[in-house]
Length: 425
Image (cartoon, rainbow, N blue to C red):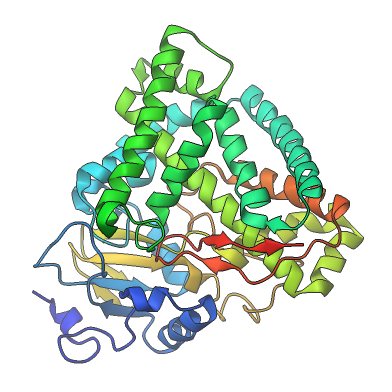
């Protein structure tokens, strides 16, 4: 049943006339979608929407959700984690409805509330000690160099396959100690999970749930093999550090590690992969920005990376559920209401970013929400992602300065702003 505040929104049953919930909306281009977001940012920044199409958990009583599209409101929801829950018990963080068990098996710290979140994040974070970070930095530089060497030898090819997907996959695999013969299986599983609503990646019989379950099973299998191997013989890698992590006698269970492995495989892989692709496309479309970056790479690359992240906005949506009543910029959010944050809209908010559809590598300030809107769920791997982007574009712009890409082919979905293929010459 709709609350009083919900029934006053939109027409008919209370749903807003600008529909953000259907697959047809997410099959549009980013520019077309933002025309709808811009209308909502101006006129109804917190709108009541029908349930997301394609939910994996049927709920006939699902009343819908609040769509939060302004930067200010996304930040408010992100930072009030004591009000807006991420827990699977309250629906988790995915746009659509997903069974709680699947969320627990795939989301790790992303779908935890306090105090469990702080304890687990400390345990996971303890594995990223200074020595591990130095090792990761060296690996990333070497990997970027090797990837661009291979690109030069390959000639015209698919940028996603030849460049964008290789660095994050390589980095995550090296960090965790994933064997070479397991890496392609891992990235295929990630593609199936991220593209579960895309016809190309759907599982047997075109069932999104089968695609998701198949991807989870594969990643859990890879993770458990690593856990078992590291418990019997330690190696100098992150998986060993996770297995051995101990804070005041508390340790990570196999379930904890498998779930975190899935989170790393998806978030640590697909986000940088797609940001790299979007950035290369932007540098092709805006040659004056490319020339500026190349004119003094060391000076411009730090703000450029922030603009790459804002421009691509690899993760487009996340959800929370209010566990108590809350006033969000004048709109009453009732306990039990679902709230979906639209990061791709927040990163085009005209009140925060001057001329938001201008790609500007010198943009400052640039308070994008590409790693979340702040608060306890800020991306733990943001430092690694920035290192990867700096390294790969340092190699590309120095060694292949005339590289260009053509029109990308996008994955249909409302979670990841993903590019399947993008030819390069």
